[in-house]
Length: 533
Picture 1 (cartoon, rainbow, N blue to C red):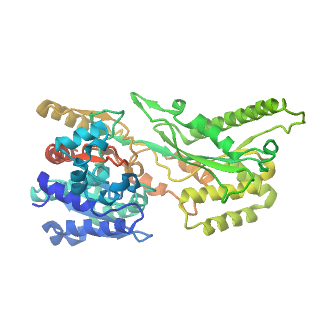
Picture 2 (tube, rainbow, N blue to C red; picture 1 turned 180 degrees about the vertical axis):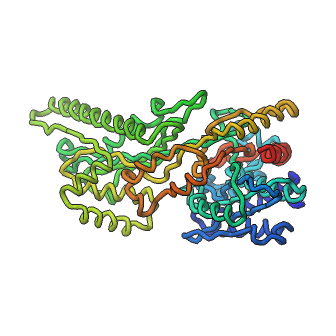
Picture 3 (tube, helix red, strand yellow; picture 1 turned 90 degrees about the vertical axis):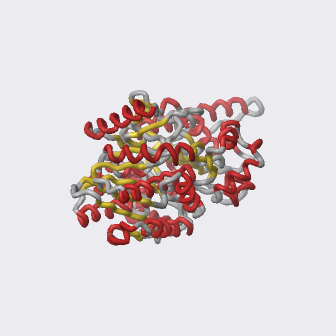
Protein backbone atom coordinates (compact mmCIF):
# COMPACT_ATOMS: atom_id res chain seq x y z
CA UNK A 1 0.00 0.00 0.00
CA UNK A 2 1.16 3.53 -0.79
CA UNK A 3 -0.23 5.86 1.92
CA UNK A 4 -0.29 3.99 5.25
CA UNK A 5 2.96 4.76 7.09
CA UNK A 6 4.07 8.08 8.50
CA UNK A 7 6.77 8.32 5.83
CA UNK A 8 4.32 7.53 3.02
CA UNK A 9 1.77 10.03 4.29
CA UNK A 10 4.45 12.69 4.64
CA UNK A 11 5.56 12.08 1.04
CA UNK A 12 1.96 12.35 -0.15
CA UNK A 13 1.47 15.56 1.84
CA UNK A 14 4.64 17.08 0.42
CA UNK A 15 3.56 16.26 -3.13
CA UNK A 16 0.19 17.94 -2.50
CA UNK A 17 1.80 21.01 -0.93
CA UNK A 18 4.26 21.37 -3.80
CA UNK A 19 1.26 22.24 -5.95
CA UNK A 20 0.99 25.83 -4.75
CA UNK A 21 -2.78 25.78 -5.15
CA UNK A 22 -3.64 29.32 -4.05
CA UNK A 23 -7.34 29.89 -4.70
CA UNK A 24 -8.03 30.91 -8.33
CA UNK A 25 -4.49 30.05 -9.44
CA UNK A 26 -3.40 27.72 -12.22
CA UNK A 27 -1.94 25.32 -9.66
CA UNK A 28 -5.37 25.00 -8.07
CA UNK A 29 -6.66 23.73 -11.41
CA UNK A 30 -3.75 21.34 -11.89
CA UNK A 31 -3.94 19.87 -8.40
CA UNK A 32 -7.42 18.46 -9.04
CA UNK A 33 -5.98 16.39 -11.90
CA UNK A 34 -3.03 15.31 -9.73
CA UNK A 35 -5.41 14.04 -7.01
CA UNK A 36 -7.49 12.22 -9.62
CA UNK A 37 -4.46 10.45 -11.10
CA UNK A 38 -3.08 9.54 -7.68
CA UNK A 39 -6.36 7.87 -6.75
CA UNK A 40 -6.54 6.23 -10.16
CA UNK A 41 -3.42 4.23 -9.21
CA UNK A 42 -5.51 2.27 -6.71
CA UNK A 43 -6.49 -1.13 -8.11
CA UNK A 44 -10.08 -0.55 -7.03
CA UNK A 45 -10.54 2.37 -9.40
CA UNK A 46 -8.78 0.49 -12.18
CA UNK A 47 -11.51 -2.13 -11.91
CA UNK A 48 -14.31 0.40 -11.17
CA UNK A 49 -13.38 3.39 -13.37
CA UNK A 50 -16.89 4.84 -13.19
CA UNK A 51 -16.49 5.40 -9.46
CA UNK A 52 -13.69 7.95 -9.85
CA UNK A 53 -14.55 11.24 -11.58
CA UNK A 54 -12.96 14.61 -12.31
CA UNK A 55 -15.84 17.10 -12.50
CA UNK A 56 -15.30 20.28 -14.50
CA UNK A 57 -16.73 23.45 -12.96
CA UNK A 58 -18.18 26.42 -14.83
CA UNK A 59 -14.99 28.48 -14.41
CA UNK A 60 -12.60 25.76 -15.60
CA UNK A 61 -11.60 24.45 -12.19
CA UNK A 62 -12.47 20.90 -11.10
CA UNK A 63 -13.43 18.83 -8.08
CA UNK A 64 -12.85 15.10 -7.57
CA UNK A 65 -15.21 12.38 -6.37
CA UNK A 66 -14.07 8.86 -5.52
CA UNK A 67 -16.65 6.28 -4.43
CA UNK A 68 -15.62 3.05 -2.71
CA UNK A 69 -18.64 0.72 -2.48
CA UNK A 70 -17.67 -1.89 0.06
CA UNK A 71 -21.16 -2.63 1.32
CA UNK A 72 -24.40 -3.87 -0.13
CA UNK A 73 -26.16 -1.27 2.03
CA UNK A 74 -27.06 2.11 0.63
CA UNK A 75 -25.70 4.10 3.57
CA UNK A 76 -22.60 6.06 2.57
CA UNK A 77 -20.21 8.30 4.50
CA UNK A 78 -19.00 11.39 2.62
CA UNK A 79 -15.39 12.44 3.26
CA UNK A 80 -14.96 16.09 2.28
CA UNK A 81 -11.76 18.11 1.98
CA UNK A 82 -10.51 21.17 0.12
CA UNK A 83 -7.20 21.52 -1.68
CA UNK A 84 -6.89 25.28 -2.17
CA UNK A 85 -4.75 27.45 0.10
CA UNK A 86 -4.31 31.13 0.89
CA UNK A 87 -1.42 33.17 -0.53
CA UNK A 88 2.17 33.26 0.70
CA UNK A 89 3.08 36.96 0.84
CA UNK A 90 3.33 36.68 4.62
CA UNK A 91 6.41 34.43 4.24
CA UNK A 92 8.55 37.40 3.17
CA UNK A 93 12.05 36.30 2.13
CA UNK A 94 11.00 32.67 2.64
CA UNK A 95 8.17 32.95 0.14
CA UNK A 96 9.94 30.79 -2.45
CA UNK A 97 10.08 27.92 0.05
CA UNK A 98 6.47 28.18 1.27
CA UNK A 99 5.40 25.26 -0.95
CA UNK A 100 8.54 23.20 -0.23
CA UNK A 101 7.83 22.03 3.32
CA UNK A 102 10.93 19.84 3.79
CA UNK A 103 13.26 22.57 2.56
CA UNK A 104 11.39 25.29 4.47
CA UNK A 105 11.56 23.36 7.73
CA UNK A 106 15.28 22.74 7.19
CA UNK A 107 15.89 26.42 6.43
CA UNK A 108 13.99 27.50 9.54
CA UNK A 109 16.36 25.35 11.59
CA UNK A 110 19.11 27.74 10.50
CA UNK A 111 17.08 30.77 11.62
CA UNK A 112 15.14 29.41 14.60
CA UNK A 113 15.63 32.68 16.46
CA UNK A 114 13.13 34.45 14.17
CA UNK A 115 10.31 32.11 15.19
CA UNK A 116 7.87 32.76 18.03
CA UNK A 117 8.72 30.72 21.13
CA UNK A 118 6.10 27.99 20.63
CA UNK A 119 6.92 27.54 16.94
CA UNK A 120 10.64 27.41 17.76
CA UNK A 121 10.00 24.72 20.37
CA UNK A 122 7.96 22.71 17.87
CA UNK A 123 10.67 23.04 15.21
CA UNK A 124 13.37 21.82 17.57
CA UNK A 125 11.31 18.76 18.56
CA UNK A 126 11.61 17.36 15.03
CA UNK A 127 7.90 16.40 15.04
CA UNK A 128 6.57 19.34 13.04
CA UNK A 129 6.56 20.20 9.34
CA UNK A 130 6.20 23.83 8.21
CA UNK A 131 4.67 25.18 5.00
CA UNK A 132 1.60 26.67 3.39
CA UNK A 133 -1.20 24.14 3.35
CA UNK A 134 0.43 21.45 5.50
CA UNK A 135 -2.20 22.14 8.15
CA UNK A 136 -5.02 23.83 6.24
CA UNK A 137 -5.85 21.36 4.93
CA UNK A 138 -3.73 19.11 2.75
CA UNK A 139 -2.88 16.82 5.66
CA UNK A 140 -6.62 16.15 6.03
CA UNK A 141 -6.88 15.36 2.33
CA UNK A 142 -3.88 13.01 2.52
CA UNK A 143 -5.46 11.21 5.48
CA UNK A 144 -8.76 10.77 3.66
CA UNK A 145 -6.98 9.39 0.58
CA UNK A 146 -5.16 6.99 2.91
CA UNK A 147 -8.49 6.00 4.45
CA UNK A 148 -9.93 5.07 1.04
CA UNK A 149 -6.91 2.90 0.32
CA UNK A 150 -7.22 1.20 3.72
CA UNK A 151 -10.95 0.57 3.31
CA UNK A 152 -10.34 -1.11 -0.05
CA UNK A 153 -7.38 -3.21 1.13
CA UNK A 154 -9.14 -4.40 4.29
CA UNK A 155 -12.50 -4.89 2.53
CA UNK A 156 -14.49 -2.77 4.94
CA UNK A 157 -18.24 -3.31 4.91
CA UNK A 158 -18.64 0.44 4.37
CA UNK A 159 -19.40 2.82 1.51
CA UNK A 160 -17.16 5.89 1.35
CA UNK A 161 -17.35 8.85 -1.04
CA UNK A 162 -14.35 11.17 -1.10
CA UNK A 163 -15.14 14.72 -2.27
CA UNK A 164 -12.09 16.97 -2.80
CA UNK A 165 -12.94 20.53 -3.81
CA UNK A 166 -11.22 23.82 -4.69
CA UNK A 167 -12.12 27.34 -3.53
CA UNK A 168 -12.97 26.79 0.11
CA UNK A 169 -10.83 29.74 1.18
CA UNK A 170 -12.71 32.39 -0.84
CA UNK A 171 -16.30 31.60 -1.90
CA UNK A 172 -16.71 27.82 -1.45
CA UNK A 173 -17.61 27.58 -5.13
CA UNK A 174 -16.14 24.08 -5.26
CA UNK A 175 -18.53 22.78 -2.63
CA UNK A 176 -21.51 24.72 -3.95
CA UNK A 177 -21.05 23.38 -7.47
CA UNK A 178 -20.49 19.86 -6.10
CA UNK A 179 -23.96 19.71 -4.51
CA UNK A 180 -25.82 18.78 -7.72
CA UNK A 181 -23.09 16.23 -8.49
CA UNK A 182 -23.62 14.59 -5.08
CA UNK A 183 -27.33 14.23 -5.77
CA UNK A 184 -26.58 12.79 -9.21
CA UNK A 185 -24.06 10.31 -7.76
CA UNK A 186 -26.59 9.15 -5.17
CA UNK A 187 -29.05 8.32 -7.94
CA UNK A 188 -26.47 6.82 -10.27
CA UNK A 189 -24.99 4.44 -7.66
CA UNK A 190 -28.19 3.92 -5.62
CA UNK A 191 -26.69 5.21 -2.37
CA UNK A 192 -27.88 7.44 0.47
CA UNK A 193 -25.71 9.79 2.48
CA UNK A 194 -25.65 8.86 6.16
CA UNK A 195 -23.18 11.52 7.35
CA UNK A 196 -20.33 13.75 6.20
CA UNK A 197 -16.87 13.87 7.81
CA UNK A 198 -14.52 16.75 7.15
CA UNK A 199 -10.87 16.56 8.22
CA UNK A 200 -10.01 20.21 8.71
CA UNK A 201 -7.34 20.55 11.41
CA UNK A 202 -8.35 21.24 14.98
CA UNK A 203 -8.51 24.96 15.73
CA UNK A 204 -7.36 26.56 18.97
CA UNK A 205 -10.15 28.10 21.05
CA UNK A 206 -7.57 30.36 22.72
CA UNK A 207 -3.76 30.87 22.54
CA UNK A 208 -1.99 27.82 23.93
CA UNK A 209 -5.01 25.53 23.55
CA UNK A 210 -3.77 21.96 23.05
CA UNK A 211 -7.11 20.16 23.36
CA UNK A 212 -8.19 17.61 20.77
CA UNK A 213 -11.62 18.39 19.33
CA UNK A 214 -14.41 16.47 17.65
CA UNK A 215 -16.78 18.94 16.04
CA UNK A 216 -20.42 18.13 15.28
CA UNK A 217 -21.15 21.24 13.24
CA UNK A 218 -19.65 24.40 11.78
CA UNK A 219 -19.97 28.05 12.58
CA UNK A 220 -21.82 30.51 10.32
CA UNK A 221 -20.48 33.67 8.74
CA UNK A 222 -21.85 37.04 7.65
CA UNK A 223 -19.91 39.76 5.84
CA UNK A 224 -21.79 42.98 6.67
CA UNK A 225 -20.66 46.15 4.97
CA UNK A 226 -21.10 49.75 6.05
CA UNK A 227 -21.00 52.18 3.14
CA UNK A 228 -20.41 55.75 4.35
CA UNK A 229 -21.51 58.62 2.10
CA UNK A 230 -20.33 61.96 3.46
CA UNK A 231 -20.30 65.43 1.92
CA UNK A 232 -17.53 66.56 -0.41
CA UNK A 233 -15.62 69.78 0.20
CA UNK A 234 -12.21 71.37 -0.36
CA UNK A 235 -9.64 70.70 2.36
CA UNK A 236 -9.45 74.46 2.85
CA UNK A 237 -13.10 74.40 3.97
CA UNK A 238 -13.32 71.13 5.94
CA UNK A 239 -16.22 72.25 8.12
CA UNK A 240 -18.40 72.60 5.01
CA UNK A 241 -18.32 68.88 4.38
CA UNK A 242 -18.14 65.51 6.15
CA UNK A 243 -15.17 63.22 5.62
CA UNK A 244 -16.22 59.62 4.97
CA UNK A 245 -13.02 58.43 6.61
CA UNK A 246 -14.28 59.89 9.88
CA UNK A 247 -17.58 58.08 9.40
CA UNK A 248 -16.07 54.70 8.61
CA UNK A 249 -13.60 55.07 11.49
CA UNK A 250 -16.46 55.51 13.93
CA UNK A 251 -18.11 52.37 12.56
CA UNK A 252 -14.84 50.49 13.01
CA UNK A 253 -14.40 51.81 16.54
CA UNK A 254 -17.78 50.35 17.42
CA UNK A 255 -17.47 47.08 15.48
CA UNK A 256 -13.89 45.89 15.99
CA UNK A 257 -13.72 43.20 18.69
CA UNK A 258 -17.22 44.17 19.83
CA UNK A 259 -17.93 41.44 22.40
CA UNK A 260 -21.59 42.48 22.54
CA UNK A 261 -21.84 40.79 19.14
CA UNK A 262 -20.34 37.53 20.40
CA UNK A 263 -22.90 34.75 20.54
CA UNK A 264 -22.86 32.11 23.26
CA UNK A 265 -24.47 28.69 22.94
CA UNK A 266 -23.80 26.53 25.98
CA UNK A 267 -20.11 26.90 26.76
CA UNK A 268 -19.19 27.87 23.19
CA UNK A 269 -18.66 31.50 22.22
CA UNK A 270 -18.06 33.03 18.80
CA UNK A 271 -14.97 35.17 18.24
CA UNK A 272 -15.71 38.92 18.09
CA UNK A 273 -16.04 40.72 14.73
CA UNK A 274 -12.97 41.97 12.93
CA UNK A 275 -12.54 44.13 9.83
CA UNK A 276 -11.51 42.52 6.55
CA UNK A 277 -11.71 45.65 4.37
CA UNK A 278 -11.65 49.35 5.22
CA UNK A 279 -10.90 52.08 2.71
CA UNK A 280 -12.06 55.31 1.15
CA UNK A 281 -13.09 55.16 -2.48
CA UNK A 282 -11.13 58.04 -4.00
CA UNK A 283 -9.34 56.88 -7.13
CA UNK A 284 -6.58 59.47 -7.10
CA UNK A 285 -5.04 62.18 -4.96
CA UNK A 286 -6.75 65.55 -4.85
CA UNK A 287 -7.52 68.25 -2.29
CA UNK A 288 -11.15 67.19 -2.18
CA UNK A 289 -11.88 65.20 0.98
CA UNK A 290 -12.89 61.55 0.56
CA UNK A 291 -16.68 61.57 0.70
CA UNK A 292 -17.23 57.81 0.23
CA UNK A 293 -15.69 55.00 2.28
CA UNK A 294 -16.52 51.43 3.19
CA UNK A 295 -15.71 48.72 5.69
CA UNK A 296 -16.56 45.00 5.63
CA UNK A 297 -16.66 42.94 8.81
CA UNK A 298 -16.21 39.26 9.46
CA UNK A 299 -19.07 38.26 11.77
CA UNK A 300 -19.43 34.68 13.03
CA UNK A 301 -22.65 33.23 14.43
CA UNK A 302 -24.31 30.04 15.65
CA UNK A 303 -28.04 30.36 16.29
CA UNK A 304 -28.80 34.01 15.60
CA UNK A 305 -31.09 34.68 12.64
CA UNK A 306 -30.44 37.00 9.72
CA UNK A 307 -33.26 39.28 10.89
CA UNK A 308 -31.68 39.57 14.33
CA UNK A 309 -28.31 40.42 12.82
CA UNK A 310 -29.84 43.09 10.60
CA UNK A 311 -31.50 44.65 13.65
CA UNK A 312 -28.30 44.68 15.73
CA UNK A 313 -26.04 45.95 12.96
CA UNK A 314 -28.54 48.65 12.04
CA UNK A 315 -28.56 49.74 15.69
CA UNK A 316 -24.77 50.08 15.59
CA UNK A 317 -24.98 52.15 12.40
CA UNK A 318 -27.55 54.45 14.01
CA UNK A 319 -25.44 54.86 17.13
CA UNK A 320 -22.41 55.61 14.96
CA UNK A 321 -24.44 58.25 13.10
CA UNK A 322 -25.41 59.89 16.40
CA UNK A 323 -21.78 59.80 17.57
CA UNK A 324 -20.61 61.43 14.33
CA UNK A 325 -23.19 64.18 14.68
CA UNK A 326 -22.13 64.83 18.29
CA UNK A 327 -18.43 64.77 17.39
CA UNK A 328 -19.00 67.25 14.55
CA UNK A 329 -20.95 69.60 16.80
CA UNK A 330 -18.23 69.51 19.47
CA UNK A 331 -15.47 70.29 16.96
CA UNK A 332 -17.46 73.13 15.41
CA UNK A 333 -18.08 74.67 18.83
CA UNK A 334 -14.37 74.51 19.62
CA UNK A 335 -13.47 76.07 16.29
CA UNK A 336 -15.74 78.99 17.08
CA UNK A 337 -13.17 80.24 19.57
CA UNK A 338 -11.18 81.46 16.59
CA UNK A 339 -14.01 83.08 14.64
CA UNK A 340 -17.78 83.40 14.76
CA UNK A 341 -19.87 81.80 12.01
CA UNK A 342 -23.15 80.03 11.46
CA UNK A 343 -22.49 76.32 11.37
CA UNK A 344 -24.14 73.81 9.02
CA UNK A 345 -25.54 71.06 11.30
CA UNK A 346 -24.38 67.53 10.42
CA UNK A 347 -27.21 65.03 10.14
CA UNK A 348 -26.38 61.42 9.20
CA UNK A 349 -29.15 59.16 7.90
CA UNK A 350 -29.02 55.35 8.11
CA UNK A 351 -30.51 52.94 5.56
CA UNK A 352 -30.29 49.31 4.61
CA UNK A 353 -29.34 48.64 1.00
CA UNK A 354 -32.88 47.38 0.48
CA UNK A 355 -34.31 50.72 1.67
CA UNK A 356 -31.85 52.72 -0.42
CA UNK A 357 -32.75 50.74 -3.54
CA UNK A 358 -36.45 51.47 -3.02
CA UNK A 359 -35.73 55.19 -2.69
CA UNK A 360 -33.56 55.19 -5.82
CA UNK A 361 -36.29 53.48 -7.84
CA UNK A 362 -38.94 55.88 -6.56
CA UNK A 363 -36.98 58.76 -8.08
CA UNK A 364 -35.37 57.23 -11.16
CA UNK A 365 -37.65 54.27 -11.98
CA UNK A 366 -37.06 50.55 -11.82
CA UNK A 367 -35.69 50.23 -15.34
CA UNK A 368 -33.08 52.96 -14.99
CA UNK A 369 -31.79 51.73 -11.64
CA UNK A 370 -31.67 48.08 -12.73
CA UNK A 371 -29.86 49.09 -15.91
CA UNK A 372 -27.25 51.02 -13.94
CA UNK A 373 -26.69 48.14 -11.53
CA UNK A 374 -26.28 45.70 -14.42
CA UNK A 375 -23.85 48.09 -16.14
CA UNK A 376 -21.74 48.41 -12.99
CA UNK A 377 -21.52 44.63 -12.55
CA UNK A 378 -20.53 44.24 -16.21
CA UNK A 379 -17.97 47.03 -16.06
CA UNK A 380 -16.36 45.56 -12.97
CA UNK A 381 -16.66 41.89 -13.86
CA UNK A 382 -12.89 41.57 -13.36
CA UNK A 383 -13.33 42.30 -9.65
CA UNK A 384 -14.47 39.79 -7.04
CA UNK A 385 -17.98 39.73 -5.61
CA UNK A 386 -17.07 41.88 -2.61
CA UNK A 387 -15.68 44.70 -4.72
CA UNK A 388 -18.61 44.41 -7.13
CA UNK A 389 -21.00 44.72 -4.19
CA UNK A 390 -19.24 47.90 -3.05
CA UNK A 391 -19.39 49.35 -6.57
CA UNK A 392 -23.14 48.67 -6.80
CA UNK A 393 -23.85 50.33 -3.45
CA UNK A 394 -21.72 53.29 -4.51
CA UNK A 395 -23.72 53.65 -7.73
CA UNK A 396 -27.12 53.44 -6.02
CA UNK A 397 -25.99 55.86 -3.31
CA UNK A 398 -24.88 58.35 -5.96
CA UNK A 399 -28.44 58.32 -7.31
CA UNK A 400 -29.67 59.32 -3.84
CA UNK A 401 -26.94 61.75 -2.80
CA UNK A 402 -29.55 64.27 -1.63
CA UNK A 403 -30.30 61.82 1.21
CA UNK A 404 -26.74 62.09 2.49
CA UNK A 405 -24.71 62.14 4.56
CA UNK A 406 -25.69 58.54 5.19
CA UNK A 407 -24.53 55.12 6.35
CA UNK A 408 -25.81 52.17 4.32
CA UNK A 409 -25.85 48.67 5.77
CA UNK A 410 -25.43 45.91 3.17
CA UNK A 411 -24.03 42.40 3.00
CA UNK A 412 -21.34 41.01 0.73
CA UNK A 413 -20.57 37.42 -0.26
CA UNK A 414 -19.88 34.87 1.02
CA UNK A 415 -22.56 33.75 3.46
CA UNK A 416 -22.01 30.55 5.45
CA UNK A 417 -24.99 29.00 7.28
CA UNK A 418 -24.33 27.70 10.78
CA UNK A 419 -24.96 23.94 10.92
CA UNK A 420 -25.01 21.43 13.75
CA UNK A 421 -25.77 17.71 14.08
CA UNK A 422 -28.89 17.03 16.15
CA UNK A 423 -29.35 13.37 15.16
CA UNK A 424 -29.26 11.42 18.43
CA UNK A 425 -28.06 8.20 16.85
CA UNK A 426 -25.12 9.95 15.25
CA UNK A 427 -24.27 11.85 18.43
CA UNK A 428 -24.41 8.63 20.47
CA UNK A 429 -21.92 7.09 18.04
CA UNK A 430 -19.66 10.15 18.34
CA UNK A 431 -19.77 10.08 22.15
CA UNK A 432 -19.09 6.35 22.22
CA UNK A 433 -16.04 7.01 20.06
CA UNK A 434 -14.80 9.69 22.48
CA UNK A 435 -15.33 7.41 25.48
CA UNK A 436 -13.56 4.48 23.84
CA UNK A 437 -10.38 6.40 23.00
CA UNK A 438 -10.22 7.98 26.44
CA UNK A 439 -10.59 4.58 28.14
CA UNK A 440 -8.44 2.50 25.80
CA UNK A 441 -5.65 4.90 24.85
CA UNK A 442 -5.97 7.88 27.24
CA UNK A 443 -6.56 10.13 24.22
CA UNK A 444 -9.21 12.63 25.15
CA UNK A 445 -11.36 14.49 22.62
CA UNK A 446 -13.48 17.48 23.60
CA UNK A 447 -16.93 17.49 22.02
CA UNK A 448 -17.47 20.83 20.30
CA UNK A 449 -20.64 21.75 18.44
CA UNK A 450 -19.27 24.41 16.11
CA UNK A 451 -16.02 24.27 14.15
CA UNK A 452 -14.81 27.87 14.41
CA UNK A 453 -12.56 27.96 11.35
CA UNK A 454 -15.39 28.05 8.76
CA UNK A 455 -15.65 25.15 6.35
CA UNK A 456 -17.67 23.58 3.55
CA UNK A 457 -19.81 21.63 6.02
CA UNK A 458 -21.99 24.77 6.17
CA UNK A 459 -23.48 23.82 2.81
CA UNK A 460 -24.21 20.17 3.53
CA UNK A 461 -25.14 20.07 7.21
CA UNK A 462 -28.46 20.70 8.90
CA UNK A 463 -29.02 24.37 9.60
CA UNK A 464 -31.42 27.28 9.55
CA UNK A 465 -31.76 28.40 5.93
CA UNK A 466 -34.32 31.15 6.52
CA UNK A 467 -31.62 33.64 5.49
CA UNK A 468 -32.62 32.77 1.92
CA UNK A 469 -35.55 35.16 2.42
CA UNK A 470 -33.27 38.10 3.29
CA UNK A 471 -30.00 37.66 1.40
CA UNK A 472 -31.40 38.55 -2.07
CA UNK A 473 -32.53 41.93 -0.75
CA UNK A 474 -29.30 43.08 0.91
CA UNK A 475 -26.48 41.43 -1.07
CA UNK A 476 -26.20 43.84 -4.02
CA UNK A 477 -24.89 41.22 -6.50
CA UNK A 478 -27.23 38.41 -5.43
CA UNK A 479 -28.72 36.71 -8.47
CA UNK A 480 -26.08 38.24 -10.74
CA UNK A 481 -22.60 37.05 -9.76
CA UNK A 482 -23.44 35.34 -6.47
CA UNK A 483 -26.21 32.96 -5.45
CA UNK A 484 -26.61 30.08 -3.04
CA UNK A 485 -28.31 26.84 -4.15
CA UNK A 486 -30.64 26.65 -1.15
CA UNK A 487 -32.84 23.99 -2.75
CA UNK A 488 -29.91 21.58 -3.22
CA UNK A 489 -28.57 22.46 0.24
CA UNK A 490 -31.89 21.60 1.87
CA UNK A 491 -32.22 18.35 -0.09
CA UNK A 492 -28.77 17.13 0.96
CA UNK A 493 -28.81 18.09 4.64
CA UNK A 494 -27.10 15.37 6.68
CA UNK A 495 -25.28 14.91 10.01
CA UNK A 496 -21.80 16.45 9.81
CA UNK A 497 -18.60 16.08 11.81
CA UNK A 498 -15.10 17.47 11.65
CA UNK A 499 -12.23 15.30 12.86
CA UNK A 500 -8.79 16.27 11.66
CA UNK A 501 -5.07 16.35 12.40
CA UNK A 502 -3.17 18.63 14.76
CA UNK A 503 -1.46 21.74 13.49
CA UNK A 504 -0.88 25.35 14.45
CA UNK A 505 -1.13 28.85 12.97
CA UNK A 506 -3.40 28.50 9.92
CA UNK A 507 -3.04 31.42 7.48
CA UNK A 508 0.23 32.46 9.13
CA UNK A 509 3.82 32.04 7.91
CA UNK A 510 4.39 29.72 10.87
CA UNK A 511 1.68 27.28 9.69
CA UNK A 512 2.81 23.79 10.68
CA UNK A 513 1.63 20.22 11.19
CA UNK A 514 2.42 17.81 13.99
CA UNK A 515 3.41 14.88 11.77
CA UNK A 516 4.07 12.54 14.71
CA UNK A 517 0.50 12.74 15.99
CA UNK A 518 -1.20 13.35 12.64
CA UNK A 519 0.49 10.55 10.69
CA UNK A 520 1.23 8.00 13.44
CA UNK A 521 -1.45 8.21 16.13
CA UNK A 522 -4.30 9.82 14.23
CA UNK A 523 -4.91 7.52 11.18
CA UNK A 524 -6.40 4.65 13.26
CA UNK A 525 -8.46 7.21 15.20
CA UNK A 526 -9.99 8.61 12.00
CA UNK A 527 -10.57 5.09 10.64
CA UNK A 528 -12.29 4.03 13.85
CA UNK A 529 -14.52 7.12 13.86
CA UNK A 530 -15.68 6.60 10.28
CA UNK A 531 -16.36 2.89 10.84
CA UNK A 532 -18.16 3.71 14.09
CA UNK A 533 -20.53 6.04 12.25
